[in-house]
Length: 511
Image 1 (cartoon, rainbow, N blue to C red):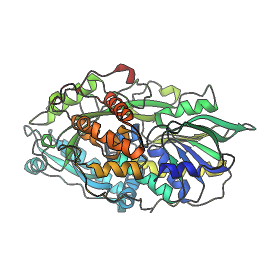
Image 2 (cartoon, rainbow, N blue to C red):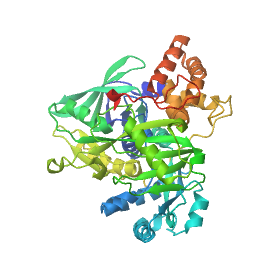
Image 3 (cartoon, rainbow, N blue to C red):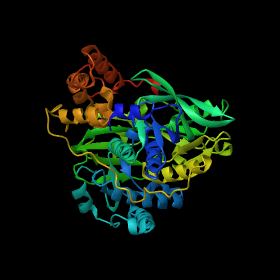
């Protein structure tokens, strides 16, 4: 993917595209991929970087949603398990099976959770990964050596999928481009173009090139996650709120706090939340929280109480418990939950369904809210079906059910970015030349995941990476220094002491 080539393809602003997608996260990219593979002329515009918001800050799981069984959402679980199987098949190397254990500390828990997970297997049908098992105490501890042994009676074993969310987003973008789609990051939609009361295009502003223009299209799809209502108000000034954000954070710890290759799922803490301890890229992810009443933000900040919550609960289940000084990185994301009916306006976001909602305005703006990574392919299919009808496009079948996503090969080895990071300068060069990376944060947060693995290490290598990017992008050293400063401002941990991993006080303005 070359950004200049993509810009050149916009061509004559008077020429209409079939489908215009606003938003380059999981939902928008799924829609663009579906539309382009059907042969519709498709353009996608993302105001920041691909997956920069919620979509790169997930729990890194492609899963059916064991916790949704507790709420009786059988349909959502069945749908998710079906899509999980497709992603495992369509994105080999990016989505992989992961073994989980649910530890049992009460006599009835093995039977209770085992029964639910047997239903999980049945709902997966032929797209299942592995069979649920019931290991004893010693077998559980052999899989998760640092799990608390006191009172452990055994556990329930099951399987789900794991992935790198930012890498999957890029694979979807790359595949959409290969099928004729146009995708552009750092391009903001600033207005909607209407003719006779119908939406016929968008006004865009390119923050990198300073270009403003009108792009015409037969149908426009709003797939902007927690920002969906901002776009809807470009269409209808008084549009009612349709998204209720909920914040979830994850702590990144050293792998030794898990001690094995098996993930742990605690299905119910004392306040009813689910806790995950997941091996990922030789680290341990600990999460997640569910904090209500947050504002939509591209870069939400973790709250001190969220960090305290995760550290405190980790100590309940791990023999050697982490402290704040053991945190390598912290990231926070906002779930774009579809707002419930007014009669249920006070419902907890922890209880809301992660299912999606698709609707169109009187002027033809198609909006998708809610959903999750696991079901994004199906969400894309549904959105394009509706958009094709509204835009009066020729009927064409969905082609993403069995579509293998294009994955970029590993680049030639280069100078290591840092001893604590599994990345080298070859990854930086590929990010700029082939993956539309335009900022230091694009490279260190999403193309290499460095900032998600070790914030201190990412800050140490930031000046060298910024200088290399300046060389590749034709920028000067002033640009490189500004990028390092901007990247540092996004970090959550205190970097004043290079050896410190102490979380800084969260900024309430970003929460």
